[in-house]
Every structure is written in C-alpha cells, then in structure tokens.
Image 1 (spheres, rainbow, N blue to C red):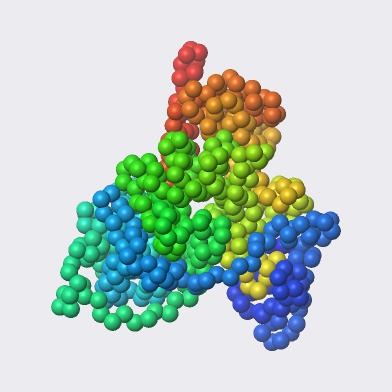
Image 2: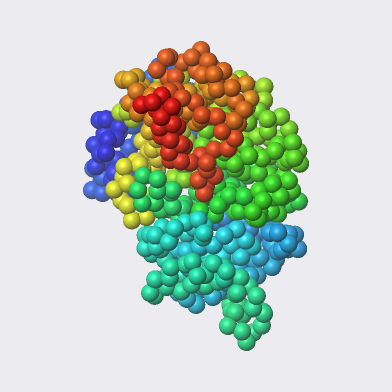
Length: 570
C-alpha cells in the first residue's frame, strides 16, 4: 500500500498503532507533528505542510476551511444511554408502532433489560457479537437494545432476504455465541453447534415475576467505552464475500447526536422505519429515533402506510422515487444517501420539506457529508463534512488536489470505523494513518470521486470504479446519467459500461422521450459518452438494500442487444 511520499510506511503504521506519541503545534488543524520513538529518539515530520507543497497559499487555507467539519461536543459516549435518558424523561411516550402494535419507552426499556439479563446468562458480555436475524418488528428493537446494554455489538441480517450461505458466513466471521430471531422465522436460522437461538417475541410474552426464568435479576453496570463496537454491518458482497465493518458507539453518537445528522428528531415527531436492518441507514432510522425520544413507525409491506404518518423519512433515492410526494406533505425532513440522487427528485421534495442529500460508505458510519438542498440551487451537491469529521480530496499519490480539481475522497475524524472483521489485508488497504489530523487517527479511502466548489461544497462524480474507459477515453458514468436526467420528465437515469466501446443507459419512467434524452447527452458531453441504447422503464430493479440493482440492469441490456441483433437478422 502507498502512503504519502517521503514518509516511510513503517513510521506511519507505527504512529497509527500508538507506538509513538504525537505533539501538535496547532491543536485544531495539526499542521506539524513531532514523533517520539520509544527510546526517546526524536524525529520530526511536518506531514501536512510537506504534502501540501503543491498547493497555492489560498488553496492551503481552503483545504482546511472546506475539509474540516465543525468541532462539536458529543453528549453521550454510547448510543443506548441517550435512549435511556428518554426513558426517564418520557416513560409513557410511544417508542415504536408496527401495524396494530405499539410499545412505550418504559416498556421497551424493561423488555430490553430482561432480554439483556437472559443474554448475560448465556455468556454474552462486553466485546461479544450477537447475531440479529429477523425482520422489521418491535422485538427487533428489544434485541438491539438488549445487546447494546451488555456492551456487545449486534450483527443484523434480514431473514427471508439473506440466503442461508450468507447467514452462515456472518455467524462464522463475527464469531457469535447467540442468535436472536422471531419465532415465526426460527426455522430459517442455521444454528451451528454450540450456539443458542432465542426467539425475542417468546421472551417478551413471558410474565414478569420473581419465579420465572425470565425475571430480571440485578443488572450490574456495564462500563461501555466510545471505542466499543455498536454494530457490525456486512457489506453487500457484490464483488466477493461480504465484509463485516466494525462501527463503534463513538462513530454512531457522532453522526446521530449532532446536527444535521439528528434531522430534527425530537419527542412528538414520528420517524419512518422502512429500510432493511442489514443496511447501515436503518441504524439512522432506529437508533436516531430512539435516542431523541421520537416515535418509530415500522413499516409492514406497504411503504406508504409508514411514510404518510412520518415527520422524518430516511431513504435511498431509488426508494424515495417510488413514493408519491403529493401524498407525503406531512413530512418535515427527508435525508437520502446510498447512491446518487437525481436533482429533479431532490427539487420536488425540497419544495415542501427540509431535504438533505448525503454521502458516505458504511465504513464512515452511515454518512459523513450532508447538504441541505434548496430547489433554487443550481447544483445538487453532497455538502460538507459533518461535525468532528474531515474530507480530503487527494490525488493518486495521496497529495491534496487543488481546489476545484477532481480527486479521490478520503474521510477522517470521528466517522472512521474500526476496520473489517477478520480481514486485516483489506483493512490495511482501505484504512491509513491520517497525516493531517495525526495523533494516531485513521482515514478511510472511500473510492468516491469529488471536488470542492468555490463555496466549499462537495460535488460527487461517482466512484473510482464508475470511471471507465470507452474507446480509450475516460468516462464518468454519473456525468452521463446526469445529462440524461436533464431531459424532460426523466426522474432517474443509470449508465453502465457495456463493453470497451459502448455504454448503455436506463431512464425512468417509461414515458421518457429516449431521443430527447440522447440529445441532452450529445449537447453536453463528447461523442464517446453517447450510450449505444437507452432503455425507458417504469421502475428500476432494486436490491434488498433499496439501491438500483445494476446486475439486473446489465442482464436487461444483454437481452436488449440480443433482441436488436435478432431484428437486424444478425
């Protein structure tokens, strides 16, 4: 792996491992660092200054002004303690509702305490992982909170969606002891030898009394640190086996308990819970809501039934695009992330509610940049770093790019998660010592391309793997999609590399004038960016996490080409 030139890899790695202490001349921006070896031999590196020698004086100032989010104090070191504060403040407030059921904050806390005691009797303690294999429900919340109360981390998978092989992989990779589920899905859970499988709903139905095995014994206080893991989220695994990302309490508290990540959640408001528990944005819905005393509206099969009631909605653009905005005028705040958002979609929702376009991979804890979008804004950006976080636009040698130049986004600060479970090689590839913050902090390679606008907002240009070569020219797929989305009535577009000479694209809805969409590409982009064909369809196929299913779109593209060849008599 390459680090910033002129600084030996071993020194940067030793710094990250805490084998040196660090002093900073500037306590905020750390422009110069001094390292002390264990034998007190002193050696100094001015990391940031050296790395920024290629920048102009003004760009050096803007690198810090744009790239550093506001410094904010976090009120809690563990997310469930914020929930417990709400229990004390409003015990009879409705914490969650699902179909015809509801539960108060006091009852949710009592049920979580009881389950936590049962988990403790099965040997679960601080630092352990508890598998949470189930579907959206109130018992799901009990399982999450019970696990966190013991200092353990929950490992979520959506039963009925995740195949058995993936469940087995998660159990093995996360080294779980206990699996929590629902009684109606217990037959779907592969339970290895030595594991215990508990149906949360059956525990909740037991009476509270001193003679029952489900009675709550004295619960010892568990010391939980901000560095303790809150949940382990497995990536989608589209390029191999899913990798488990360790997200800490400090990571979660930093985004959910500060603005704008808190999304204005408060007692009296309702938050829709529409996403799969296996998706990191579901933690934004669930833990964000319960930490702020709001009511979680857990959806059934009908998305709109929950969204119509909600004040706060968190979704991917693909999911949000399926909602009828005219039926959702009660919604006060919307946040989208997970994939590029079409500007027409953002404009529509921002016309009547507070709309945030956000970005950030699982490894940077849900999102680490946010922009409040206004319909009158010329551009839709992904905003600025959230509190206590940083964003660096770096070149291939990991040196800062001049302001306005496209580079790769590296994320630093409190958002950076604790790495991958059981995959040190991948951790070392994607996480690196942060030479700008220093003090043993780490930064994460997002593989997203971006650049700073003159007023300090981030424009997103897709991922490095979405920057493809067509006929020898480099093409950014999102730029083609953006041109297509500027066509009349086009709500969303997706562009894929078909082969070394051609792109293919998809637009929705089916009523989009394909020829008019192509003309937009022709007017804005070079000739080699023109898709071989554009397919209009009412809805795009989606993955279980609510993102566009590009694999399925590629299958459609192959079928489309075969049909064209048949018509041409090839």
